[in-house]
Image (cartoon, rainbow over all chains, first blue to last red; front, side, top):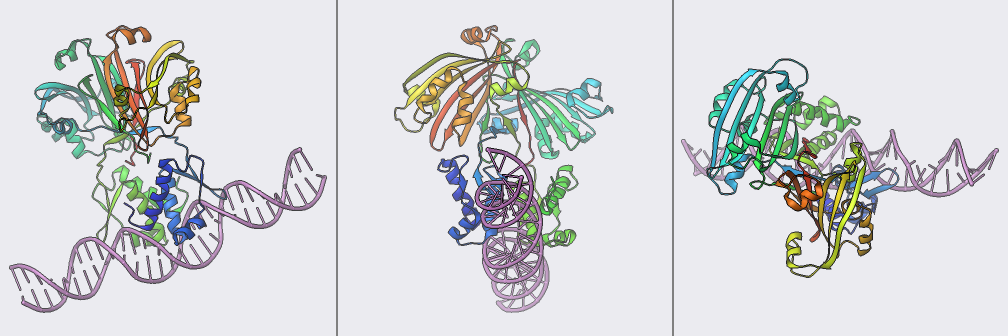
Amino acid sequence: MADTLHQRIRSDIETRILSGTWEPGYRIPFEHELMEQYRCSRMTVNKALSSLAEAGLIERRRRAGSFVARPLAQSAVLQIPDIPAEITARGDAYGYELLSSTRRKSTQEDRDRLRATGNGVLPVLDLCCRHLARGEPFAIEERLMNLAIVPEDAITAFKTTPPGTWLLHHVPWTEAENRIYAVQAGPAKAKLLGVAPDKACLVVERRTWRGADTVTFVRLTYPGDLYQLVAQFTPTR
Amino acid sequence: MADTLHQRIRSDIETRILSGTWEPGYRIPFEHELMEQYRCSRMTVNKALSSLAEAGLIERRRRAGSFVARPLAQSAVLQIPDIPAEITARGDAYGYELLSSTRRKSTQEDRDRLRATGNGVLPVLDLCCRHLARGEPFAIEERLMNLAIVPEDAITAFKTTPPGTWLLHHVPWTEAENRIYAVQAGPAKAKLLGVAPDKACLVVERRTWRGADTVTFVRLTYPGDLYQLVAQFTPTR
DNA sequence: ATGTTTAATATGTATAGACAAATAAGCGGT
DNA sequence: ACCGCTTATTTGTCTATACATATTAAACAT
């Protein structure tokens, strides 16, 4: 890890910040002090400190010095794994069923769901599928895709490949928004998931963009006790 | 944004990557080519490219060049805001009620909930409180705190200040794990939240560490339709 | 044909020096 | 006591150069 000099300087300082030795607001040594301490040039020290500043661990003020930042960003990295990969990872057999697939010109409602900019009519694909773990229903996926971006010949792939997995490997995206909430299953989804209609379900809705264009909207519905989203904090924002 | 030269070089390249002009795998110009293009020294180009590499947007290989990275990390930044701040932000009046507060030596069950390392007995504070928005129940908070880290005189503060808010401003943490799932309210929480017992609720459980020590465990229960977690994707992993 | 050495090339890291920009602190005048 | 000016200090940025290291392609030997 601490291979090069500037990496070592960085990790030395990082360690002291994360251990609490240097508390938020503490003024870390000036560049010229670290220069002497590590017997190196200012550029080397500067590289280490710039990197720490970019990561949000320190704040730098001209004439004043560099200070340990207050933990402002209370954020965590939310992993949104591919469903087949996740089920396989837990050692269960994965199953996929395409329930319906409709190709049409977008209605206003479709464009609202996609949060598409402009009112232009787009070709869209509306599909619904079911993910199974050890033969039991695991999640319902409702998806709307923008066929102006997703090539039309992908449609046949979705008969056997979950669209999320296909998209992950074929269509990169630049921005996404996730919304997570809880609802009761309701009669239709209860039947598909094999649970009672009042069963609490976790819903993850995701919109994905590539530049200015919306790629896809997806709503995943999981029976509440089958699935837990896990978000791990990583210090570097 | 593009103030300095190396920042401009960086954002020029970033734009082309995010717009899709330069696709994953594309070899971006060599350092000496960018040197000529921008009429600057190699160090300046190098700083821009190093920064892009650190952010995970490009991969660099000696002798071969620098390449646009494949979008490997399907992760998003999950904002877990302070509840009073969030309610105030949406323009509602915030209310806080401390329901119970117990100080005791930790049982094995407490240590399991905290995922505390080692079997040492710790002083802990077990409390339960309710958050209100415009006078209506918004969330139930069940919290277990490690009094070996949280100073004891903070306990009096919790009569009027939500523990989450207090901790946020007083006790920094280095690591956290969040689990998100859905359950039915159940009789006890239904009463506290003023909803039907079969109501679907969103549950966020969070454990927080500072170095090797567990700081706190908290379980937040929100009526499903009152609250949505929002996770925004940011390109730099 | 195949394996080995060598050279060329691109990035990685570092030095030493320079000037610019921001600002905390001191100073002086009112 | 307050305001404005100057100065010293620290970070921000950049240049020019140097040597190290990894890797590929070509030259060479077997």
